[in-house]
Amino acid sequence: MAVYTDLADTDLEAFLADYDIGAPLSFKGIAEGVENSNFLLETQNGRYILTIYERRVRADDLPFFLSLMQWLPAAGYPSAAPIADRGGQLLRYARGKPAALIAFLPGLAVRRPTVAHCREAGEGLGWLHTASRDFPGRRENDLGQPAWEPMARRLTDAADGLKPGLAASILGDAAHLAGRWPVDLPQGIVHADYFPDNVFFRDGKFAGTIDFYFAAWDALAYDIGVALNAWCFEPDGSFNITAARAFIDGYERRRQLSAAEKLALPVLAHGAALRFFLTRLNDWGSIPAGALVAPKDPLEYERKLAVHRAGLALFETPR
Amino acid sequence: MAVYTDLADTDLEAFLADYDIGAPLSFKGIAEGVENSNFLLETQNGRYILTIYERRVRADDLPFFLSLMQWLPAAGYPSAAPIADRGGQLLRYARGKPAALIAFLPGLAVRRPTVAHCREAGEGLGWLHTASRDFPGRRENDLGQPAWEPMARRLTDAADGLKPGLAASILGDAAHLAGRWPVDLPQGIVHADYFPDNVFFRDGKFAGTIDFYFAAWDALAYDIGVALNAWCFEPDGSFNITAARAFIDGYERRRQLSAAEKLALPVLAHGAALRFFLTRLNDWGSIPAGALVAPKDPLEYERKLAVHRAGLALFETPR
Image (tube, rainbow over all chains, first blue to last red; front, side, top):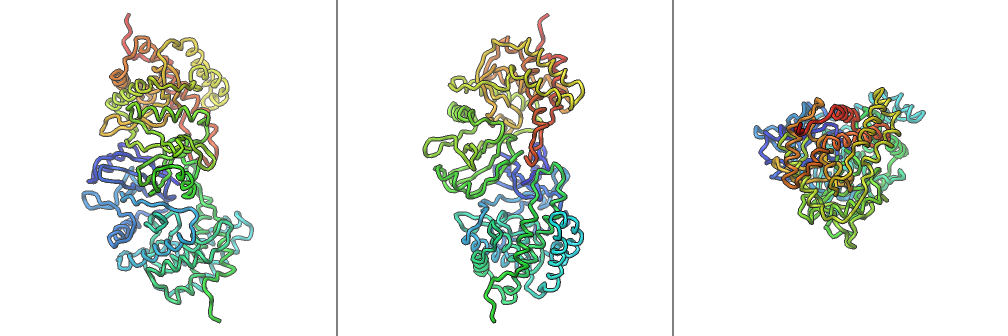
């Protein structure tokens, strides 16, 4: 939860002067999105999210994110469209920081997904991959597999500080993954942060996806790897194979996985666990004082890494 | 800004089970209210604020606050009504803490009020005092004048830590006010926290008041004293007499002040400045780690106290 940049009524008025969305009726900072400041705005025309982009989101990447967010609803996908100003611009500035106005997407995130939620969420992800198929934009996944070994090397002190011997384990993960990382899987636009707090439901049905600020070009099945970690572990750290199969089953309602993709899922999920462990470890030591944000515990992902090291049996393997 | 208590979808579901307001469509923690956790909830029936009462708000006082909040809209005043559950209860519990569901009140708070805003806000306060005239509830103002000297004594170390010599100044303020505090002014329900962030506007007109969690029985004109400090000082610390007169003028559109009340305003405003200085000083040293809230600078009110010590000339005094 975060509101890093305080926006006064006069800042809002200045920001809205270039939009044709009517006068503001209410405006509230919301505790959503760890990376950015978000405000819920109601005007005579409807409801919007005003996002101010803070640290980690690179301004150079914003045109890619915003054009993807514009593309998806136009392709029929339930996600929030950015609103252009009178000059057709999606990317603006508020208090000197990059900012955008986004349509409000209703829906409820779930905290502890059931198997039924996993199936729905899987379908939402498969749908995302088909809806974005012809999107022309490209962005390299700067948090993809090639980044992990250098990150792990940079964070050895932090890792051992968290738990003695952990640096060696994660360097081992990075080396193991580098040797087995699949390179010929179907590529496309991945969400890369498809966690339960970014997926909305209504009456138990998938209702939409938010927060595309890690989206990139990568193996589509990598997104499933990210999601298996985020959706299919129990609070006690155990992997819920039923939830995972439901997620994959839901996904395949929209997009069929190849045999190579299915076979690669355990290593993709292992890699995704390393990616989130590394960024959480990095954030753990670097949240600035006064940021009003609680960093996420990297040890949650360390426990997932341990599960992956032991091997994830997703499908019965032919003998 | 604050969300102290995290509320998951399942907590929300449990909470809403006893209400007849339809299924939830969206639910977001909002950065509003320093004392409580607030969530904006949309259901099929409309929009609501779900408030979880945290530290400082005493559970014993909640029935008074909630019945006042129920009284005011019924008396035609634009404020947010609490919603009763099926059993007629306004006060409920969520995750073991007292909680209530409140109707959503649209409107925008202003950060830097103009003279025109002050006039409107004054009218809103006068209206509040007439709308609450027959409200039968009573709550002693535990942060009223009798509380200041003991608080100042308890905080001498903190005061001198903030600025050497400050403890003596504020003990002097408390003694000075004790000797001159008016005791025969008209009493009634005061908001006691009528700051710009608790007052909503629409198209520059007063649109409503929120946050009644300091309301109490006290001299009505004391509320004007609180408001003069909160609305009529410039960022450079100077007192804006034009804004103050506009506030009082707006107030008198709804309720005429007696000569004794007008004469008492400088000492009431001095007292109100001491009250906010003392509670901010107290909070300054006591915000728990991880509270995700920025304490308010007590020095802002120390500067206001200095203005009051020099004497506030609100009206021309007869020679």
